[in-house]
Length: 628
Image 1 (cartoon, helix red, strand yellow):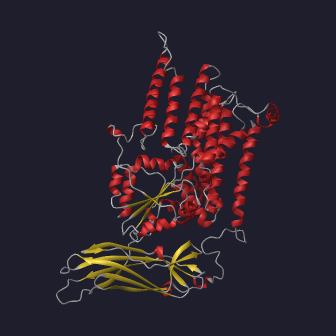
Image 2 (cartoon, one colour):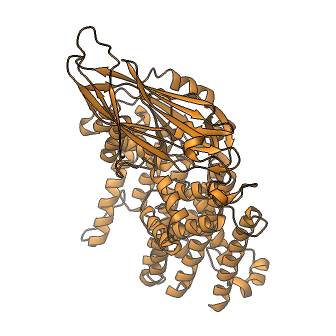
Image 3 (cartoon, rainbow, N blue to C red):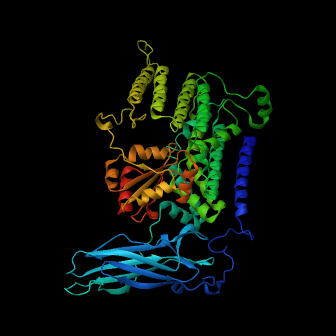
């Protein structure tokens, strides 16, 4: 027992050492990780702004001007200073008798910024135009205007955001009077008007500013919630199959195997996440190709066949005798083999992206703090692994001893391993082919359960029960064959006839997405939206949550109603090409699923970004808020 624990601890320490080594090159000369403005050279802190101009001199804001058709806002920007184009916030919380048009922002120029990476910066002069249309010129009208901005001194300091509020009163216009008459009063801006940010950015901000222990506990809780998603479910039969394949299983041995699997999964998930945050490369996406998925599916098929008793998986006798003193080899693999299976499961089985994961990666990418970001990812992974640890450990208590029951249990887990193999192949095979594979699995399982065998008179109740289950599996498999033959694009193992117009299985009309293959095509599509709001969906065939969105969220009537008048674009990043990576890098998208919304000015509404799966009702409400 202690020798095995020593192996687990050794593996854990080794992986943590790799993680710490990755973070070392990011440190400054004094050993501290650069935060905020601390890494900018030549800063004079005597006036609190690093020697730069005071903000009111750096960005001189003129009172709004009204020409009868639009409000005009103007800033004079000092030399070697600039304003961020995407930091302007223009709100009109009250427009009594006035209709506001689309806000027209200055174009700006692309700049590599010390604080926010690649941005659009505005130099010299900045003008914003807000078209206004009055319902009745013979009646007075008024509106409240809230305007916010943020800028930097070149290479010195980034100023905090500034906000101003104005009450604009437009008098009734009599014949012969100028239509541009108005009065302006500066008013305080309510505190309850925060800038909307996405959930992933909120989580990244919590990492940067929150209490470390509370943050790690929060990520542990996030992981527990993610454990009940389709990305983690397939790991249950994998771990259970490994444990069932062991000989002389005890609860202690089951716990050790489960712990090894979970730690290897968590450490690999953490390391892959840290690399994605630092280098912008999603390692898990790299493994989602036909060759890797095919090989891994083949491994599960081999494991399943051993469960059925076709052979015993063992190392060659010579090698096994040498390794016995180290890891006590058993049928089904050693601790090292279990750890390898856990690492591969993290890379291949569960490449899903959710807001907590994206938030941690955004934090790592922005701050370079691989230690805290990696610790958060490790806590997230452990949360995902806790149910696996409980299930695996309990297997050592409730699994029957050797005998007929044990063979039945092994066969059942063999079927589950075959199901995982088919589930992986769904990502790369045509829908009709995977339906046939599911049908074959169900039909063969029904035969194994005796659906075609004669039930002797007075047969036991359990035999009748299993035969009944077998008949149901046979019927479902037959329906899957029919769905595959007819070729419905909506059919699945749970809904074999979906989309064929048979009662409640009839699908809603498919949303018409326009696929954009690269950044140029995306920009053309945004410009061609003609002022309509735009939704961009990042999708991949290997993304389980993406398939959930396609099957359950997008066909919903409420979602489709909310998307009326919205231009729908799709970035299919299945093959992880250079163009796919460029699009994800441009928008700081960790991986699919991610849904981005753009306003009439072709700029993303950052606060409306949705990462991960969202159920239909919640997504419909999110859309209505995002496009209003």
